[in-house]
Length: 256
Image (cartoon, rainbow, N blue to C red; front, top):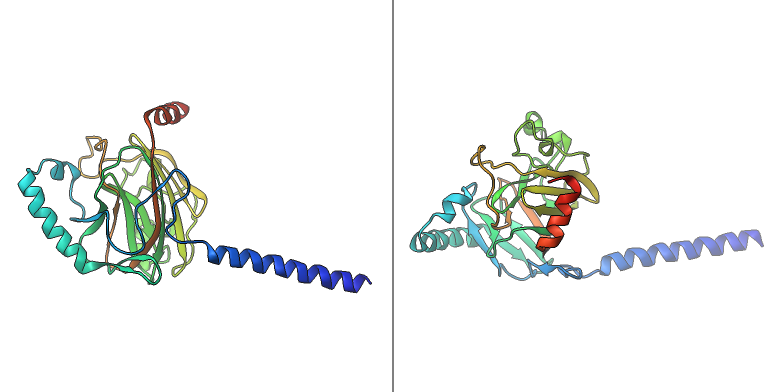
């Protein structure tokens, strides 16, 4: 009798596990949670523009309308050569070359979710915030990047000043190359919070101005996906703009 009960329990447990896995597999891709806006529709590059890699956002802000239009046409041509959509999988694909991919809209204070997949070993990428570098993406096992801290893992503000605690992740939380990872990023003012695969890697640290160390970053700008020499894929990109009251309350908690 005990054996029959044990077998029945095992079967029930296996059924529960199977149902859980099936449910996870059946979750729709590129469908934002409540309160968030979809940035990538899984079908095309709508809402995204090419942006020259590592260009100072202040420089772009100072372009005349004609200059910006000419540059944007050039960058979008490059975008279409090096960025594509794997419609069958609902994934945004960078071949590792050309311009970065930026939102057409500029954002101030916001909360962002984005999944990323490093296809091959020794890759490098990142997420630019208001056009500034960056929430870092590494292959932690890349032997060429040991001196740059890759073994510490992704999810830090790597381009911060060396004495800024945000430069290094609080924990190493990367999944192995070839598996999906999820960033949860929040930016208010110059402060940034980052979680990688559910583990916090940056806790309210300042994003330094990479282009002008003596100055602050602009209050608004695009969210950009970096291309940096290796194929990388993105999906499930969602944003929520943070209002003034929420921003003020959040900064008050950290004395910012």
